[in-house]
Image 1 (cartoon, rainbow, N blue to C red):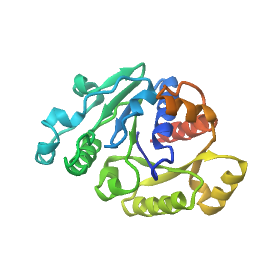
Image 2: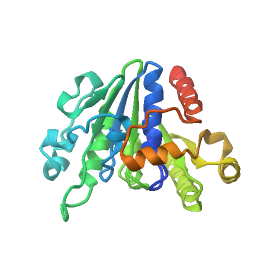
Image 3: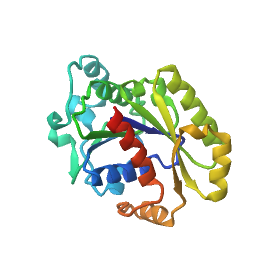
Length: 245
């Protein structure tokens, strides 16, 4: 199953991607985490994995990426991916599409194009699970990155901005025939109730409570190596989908 995690900036996409990857790996799945966010430099720390080399360098770097992506043909499989562009720990592998490093180097469009093509061409074998951690907002939807996924997981934090963006994501997902589900994050009993009233409850598949350990570990750049309430509920739902697929 190929899942894409999206939402507004700061809502907890990378945290959810990390915790979900660790939970699925514990259950015996081979998990590939794809970092498609050109401005996130710390997903590897949360996973406790060394940073991989940018996958865009495999094609000659950002300047020639657009032309190279156009010629990409055939299927990719996890076991066949170039090892120099993967970092690994246990059942989890991490791949980073590319980053913006220098002032004036241009937009992230080539990185989005590579992400979209890669997700379309990647074929998962039995027992493999993919989690794509996206950049903030909905540009990746505009660039067609979600075309190659099976489901979209929208992370919603307790803010009106997050709720409105989630509704927009749901509408765009419907336009391309993709299933979208909501993960409530950083909630307590009161804010969870408010979000449930504002959203389609049938699409809510997990609720992650506020956890001071996440804040402290993220601030220090440490691995998120502990269980968080709500993640098992989310993994249970995805596992049921996985089995039915």
